[in-house]
Length: 381
Image (cartoon, rainbow, N blue to C red):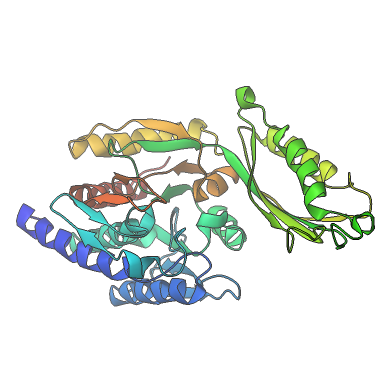
């Protein structure tokens, strides 16, 4: 394919990226995520793929995409359709671009990856390679909140696969990701007893006071040197300043390096939240460890070498790193299959109003993904 042809492909990709960026699809905007799902599903059907819609009540629908002639696909590709942005963000700052960058909610994380994945498959078809039949693609709808509703789906198909290619975006150096910290989400609700803070304070039981005790104890679980962090990131409660708070809540994020740490952290959090410090209040804890740590192993090392070799053939030397954030690569890695992450296009400032995509990385990352698919299909790992 000539450079002129690829320039045309880049223009096509940008138009599709603009279309799906301008669909409001924060994790909790089910209608918007389903619009993205429907659009992507139709694009895969146009190139002859079978699209299985996994309907969800609380979140957007997930898609499982394979070619009808696929026998036992060995390669699992995962991309998420949701973003972190609340409803109304697209209206405030829709897709835009200049000569070098594209902007908009989710343009980098990870709507551009959806389109480079599609075009990698189209490229394989156009060059006459049957390796696209060795691929199963999962497009999930809740990665940004830990893939709670899609985890079982990912685990199911990861166990049937040999390799996982996670098309999360990469940094401006194109660095691949082979390790991630584990993580979890917990939701603590405290119930107290309301009373007038001036007239009858003794009759009240403050949910906020109880929550304050728990915040201190939870944060004390952090061990920075060991890579364990607990963060109570969102709190709320009470009804008015002159009322003893009848209710309060906290959303808790946890990160860790190892499976053993995850197990111990979960036990400690549950123990802390099993008894009250303020008599007369009560506690309810939901959630848990959502992502086990992604730990680099020998199989991943072998897959990394293949990806790096294919990148060199395309003129790029790629390195890998471990990062603190989580992805669906944590899930695939935990079931024992070789996993490489950050195979999507370049950019930065994810989850912010300044999020950007490096336009010139669209074609190279499309080519790299296609070459890796073809290489893996033609060898035994």
